[in-house]
Length: 436
Image (tube, rainbow, N blue to C red; front, side, top):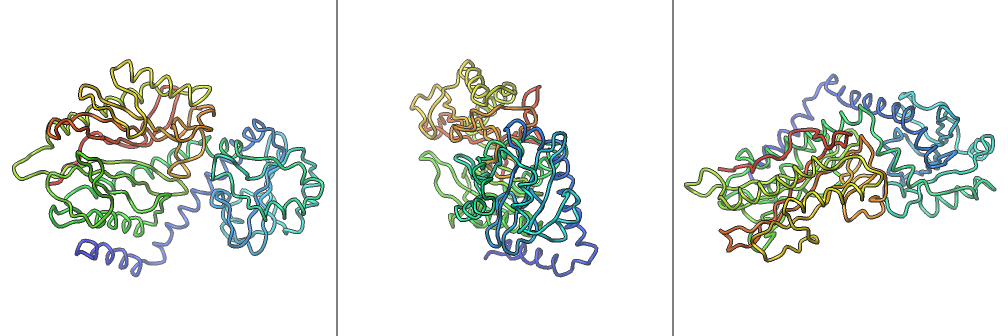
C-alpha cells in the first residue's frame, strides 16, 4: 500500500471514529430525500404506468436473504420470512400495502396505506379481484426479474385461482422506473457531479506521480473516496486503463503510470439509489511538454464533434431505435464512418464511430428506453422526455505519432432527454486532463 493510499484510508477511518451524533443526520437527510422521491413516484408516475401496461395489481415478493432489486425503491424494510408489496390500481390513485414486512424506515416514510401480515395476502387480493397481476419476471431487464422460481411457486399457491392471472411486469417496471420526477433528476445530477469531481481528482497530480503510482493505486483511491462518502457503485473496480497503438495496454493493474501514457477511466457512483456511468481521459506529460501531442488532441476533438451531433439530434421519438437511426444519419452526413464495436478501418482519412447511448439512473446501465446496440429490446421502447441516458461513443482517429494507428477516444457523460434535445446534468468531459 503506497503512502497516498494509506493517508486516504486513515482519513476515512478518522472521519468515522470522530463523527458526533449530529453528523449522523446525513443518514436521515438521505432517507427523507428517498421518501420524497418514493411519494412522488407512487402518486404521479405509478398510476399511468399501470394503466399503460394494463395492470390492475402489482405484487413484489421477497423473503429473508432474497431481496428484489427494487427493495430500495420500495422503501426497504425487514423481511423476516415472506413479504409482499402489493399495489392496486384504484382509478385515480394506486393503493399501496405491505404484508409481512416492517421497519422504521419503511413505516415512517408515510407512503403506504396499510401494513399487515403475510398471511393476509390471499384475502387481500381476492377482495380487490384484479384481472391482471404483474410480477417481476422479465426476459430482457434484470432489474425487473426479481421473482425467483420458488417465490413464484409460493405466490401461486398462496393466491389460489388468482395465481392464473399473473403476468410479466417487465415493461411496467421499466416505465415506472424510467419516467422521472423533478426531484429524481435533481438527485441524479448531484450523483453525476460527485462522480465527476472524484474522477477528475483521480486523474491529477493529487493522486498520480508519474513513475510511482500504479493503475490500481488510482482505482483503490477512488474506491476509498466512495467508502468515505457513503457511495456505492453498480460496477466493480473503477476501470483505469492505458491506451496505446495496440489498444488497451493494462486495466486497474500494477502497471506503473509513465510519462507519455494516455489514460482512460470508466466508472460511476451510487447515491440515493441513482447510479452514474462516465468516462474521463488524461495524458501524462513527457519532460518538456506543456500539452498533449497534436495527434491526441485532434482525436479528442473528433470525438467531441460526434458528441455535439448526438446532443443536437437525440430527441423524443416513438422508439429509441428511431432516435438513434436519425442520429446515425446526422453523424454519417458529417463525414464520420459507422462501424461495429472495436472494428476500426485501416483508412487514416476517416474517423470511425461506434455509438452506445444507453439508459442510466438506477443502475449504471439502467432501465427504460435505450439507444445502445446491446439493448435490442429496449430500443423498441418509446423515448420520452425526462429519460436519463448516457451519451456514450467511441471515435477512432488515426494518430500520425503512432504510425497512423487509430486512437480510440471514449466519451461518456450522463444527460436527460428533453423536447429541446439532450441536456447535460453536470459539466461534461470537454478537455484532456493533464498530469504533470
